[in-house]
Length: 168
View (cartoon, rainbow, N blue to C red):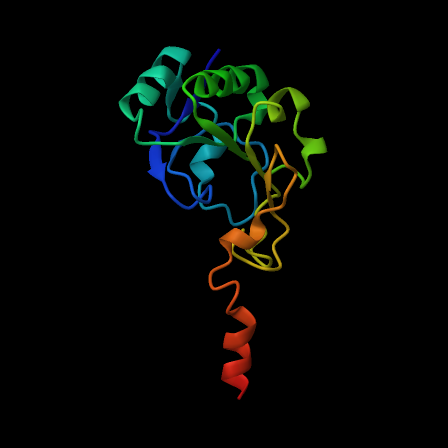
């Protein structure tokens, strides 16, 4: 099974403490207002990500990455699950960034059982992304259920100190 994606990129911030190969999957149905990647809405955009081409990408970056991230793809569950299983067989952690509602109950259990990390929640400009303390988005360790949003907030420990010092 396959779906289309953009050329994958190496990313450092999407999964804390991991070097990830990120695949942006086309055909997103969420269509968040203010989306920075509207090209991902068109399922025909990008190139086909077959299992063979996915394996080629993983071999190219083997020993350089520790995780594979999918920006979307949950709308083609079977194709996504195949890629997650392949990544796991390479010894890699897996992550899905989804615009679906927060909470694993909105992501098919057939998908989430193969994930290490899951980000849910549509982009809302007034609430910001994972770096915002008021975001509607949730980033979880699927294995433990732990919410990890605090890892995305810069100067998390010094946030209140900085605000206090400005007022002083």
